[in-house]
Length: 70
Image 1: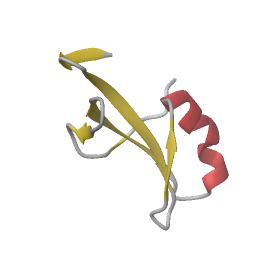
Image 2: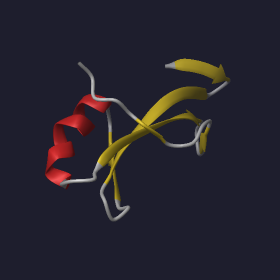
Image 3: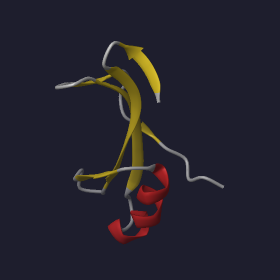
C-alpha cells in the first residue's frame, strides 16, 4: 500500500460481476479468480484503485476488467 497523505492509503478493490450485474466483493485478485467459475458464464473480475481514510473510501479510477494471473 502506498500512502496518499496523513491517514490515507491507496488500495485495490476486487469484485466479481455476474452476467446479471450483481457484484460480490473479494479481498484479493487470487481469491476473486478462485471463485470466478462458480458465478457462471459471463462473470468477470473487476478491479479499481481506491484511497481509504479513517471514515471514507474514495475511488481513484473506474472499474476495469482484470486479467487472470498466469
